[in-house]
Image (cartoon, rainbow, N blue to C red):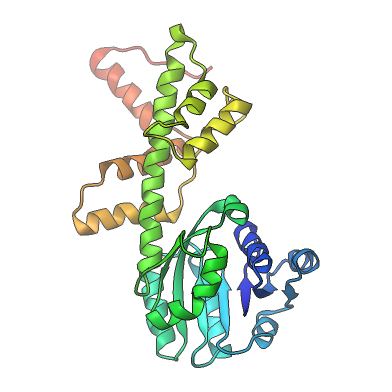
Length: 303
């Protein structure tokens, strides 16, 4: 089986490696020609010099998998690809697109006879070794055609991937997955900060997180990674206290509002990331000013 992969960054490049090692022929294209050349030399990927060149190296049904930033880059690439494809061909969006966009794109492509799959993809930089968790939305026919590819990318042929519903369902499921991820990360961060703050016990956070990894109800891959990081450095003084947020965390909170479903943990976890991104700290300055105004509380001034 042969497919094309467009966008050969950390995720896309490693997905090519896993596909090739699983026996799938891959035509690869990226604007960075050196990345294309490297994967061609190392993994036997078929190099493409352009989008048109990549499509020309495929035979029907042609499958083009996109691993691009959400929003305009993905939109523009799909719009550019559609005229090059024909009835029965398939476009897969494996990035973190908004599920509303995926529904719209799927409907537009269906009008032209082109199949579409939205693939929520989790696994990060560890996906090459461990496999990717794939939550996919598509018609049954597109899912059937894509099954051999999904089985190679997943941790095993019979687990770690699922056709969860129609177009849009894959990215919706991944969106909620990322919202839960925010909450789990925030919970670990707060709990470990409380442990570190109890100075009279001089607790070893590396020891405790390693302990929790075994038979504890909070054991998880996220805890595994945290324990590994704390073994190297518990002070974290070289790490800036700034945590970006992806679009999916925000979209999850918007979805909760739209459905009228209470999701306080996911919402607050997102807002805590906003707090870390506030370099001016203006809101906190106002709070200090108010406390001084009504209670005469001391105000700490910058040196």
